[in-house]
Every structure is written in C-alpha cells, then in structure tokens.
Image 1 (cartoon, rainbow, N blue to C red):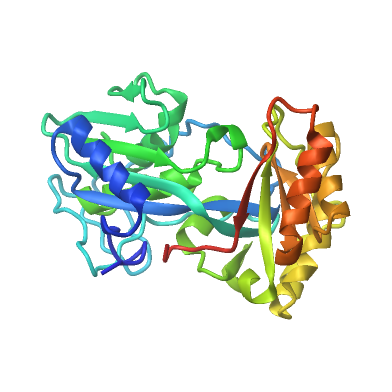
Image 2: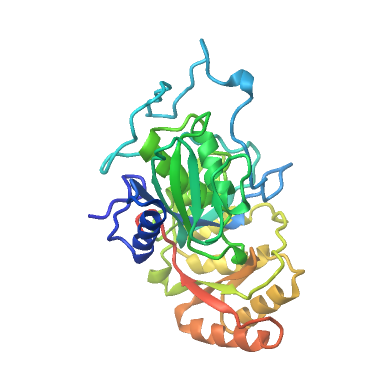
Length: 370
C-alpha cells in the first residue's frame, strides 16, 4: 500500500523511477536500501525574494549554528512542535511505515520576506539510503554516473544538497550510503535543489532519528512546496505560514506547459514592481479562477533574454493565457485545447535560433501523495 511522503517511506511498487533508484542502490552497494524517500519539485511561480538576500543562496551552506550555541550542559536543543529530540549517541532509527516523520524543525521565514506562490511538480528527487557499515559517507548520483562523494571535505556540486541535509542532521554527520536521483535535468534550471535536501533529510530521519537543526533550505518556498504541497493546490507562503489554495488545473481545463528551449542563460528575476502580485494571484485562486494566474505570470516576466522572450511571445500568441521565464525555461498556463497549437508555434518560431528543438512538459499541481 502506498504511503504519503510524510507518513513513511515510499514503496518499491509506487513508480518505475523509484524501482530503478532502489535497483541502482543495490547494484552499487551490494545491499537493498533501508529507506526510499521522494520529494516533489517545488517551483516558485511568483514572489519569494527576501530583502538583502540574493534569490540563489550559496549552494553549499553549512546550517550548523555558531559553536557557542551548540547544545551543551545547560543548553539543551529544543525540538520542533510536537516532536521529541533525543540528543544521546546511538539514538534509535526513525519511525517506520505508518508513523509520521518530517525533515526536522523549520526555521521561521525571514521577517519582511516577499510572499511567494509555489506549486509542486511531479518531478522532484528520489533518495535511496542505508547505513554505512564502516561509519563513513558514500554518496552516488544517478545523474552523474562518474561522480562519487566519499568525503565531506571535497564536495562536488551535485552533492551539495544531500550534504546540506547531512550537516544539519548531526555533528559529526551520520554515517550513510545514499543514491540521489533528480528527475529533471539540471540544465533546465527549474529545480533549486530544495527537493533533494527535503528527500535526503527524510531518509536520514528514517535511519538516524530527528535532526538536530533545520537545514539551510528549510525556509525557502521550494522546500516548503516539496514538503507541504497537496495535489490540485498551490501553496501561498507568507510570514503567517503556508496556506493551501485551490489550483485544480484538470478541472479547469488548464495545464502548466513547461517549455525547455535548451537555453544557456538563466531567466532574469526581478522584484515584483507592484508589490501585491502574489496577493492578487491568491485572490484569484481563492475565488476558483485559476485562469487569472496567467496574466499575472506575464506581468512578473522580466524581459532581457531574447530566446526566452521569443518563446513566451509565441506561446501567448498561440493561445497561452500567460507565462514567464523561470530557470532556463518558460512556464506558461495553457488551456488544454491550445496545448498542441502552442507547442507547434513555439517550435516554429525557435527553428534555427536554438541548438535543438524545444522540449515540452505538461503538468498539473502535484503534491506529496505522488
């Protein structure tokens, strides 16, 4: 029986990608994984920038607090709400199937952070993990077959996000063997890595119990979407916390159409000039009008990348309700009846301007019940 993301590890029968990830783990390490975790890919559609902070954090953050604040005599760590934290060495493995486990306490969002509207895509990250018999760390990427990370002193870029979860879990980081499978190519620029942190943190929780500290990504909209999003809903994120908003694209005859043009430049992300675009989007969704999100996506688009701009213009001329460049892709909101026409027009307009034809993904709002 399939369990939800927060209720327990996913089962081998859930999805071919999960079965493949488990198979690769056994092929690399010689034993089946102890736990498998999957987190959907969180995508921030609108907002999300915090004052005084870049939109992309350091890809290798160390979430550990100042050494003076590390728990010691008279300074016991505080667990998150409703959770117990056992600081003793050799603590028991985390909950098994049917028992709730989250990736750890979530820090408060920075006060004054720009509100965000995020959605979860069906493609995220799968992590297969098990204990390391020799007490070390051994990380393997299904997306970078020649790379392996066996030392936290020399971390390749692809391993930065699982290592973030490791460093937050305990000091020193717990022993683990781990396979990481990111389900969208990094070249699309759509996945921030927060989904990988989320999946890795949950897998570590299954093996070693609750973490000592929240990860550095835990306050990001993409992480919150990976953890909290529900199918047919978008996630509004404000200082008051996450709020589920109805976003049933299938019922409305709409789709998110992801256009991967093979760009080499990232979209330009600028602060919302009006200051209320997220709230206007939230009002449209609360009113049961998901189509109203389309023009707001276009309003948030920052021009300046000619190929991305051309793809968006061709899509809207062909019937898309609106869209914007995110990562190295264009995200559009399209009526189902117009999807084929939009694909054809975008492909025709980009012919001869890109190194390959564009690739398309159609999506609805997913969630942790994948």
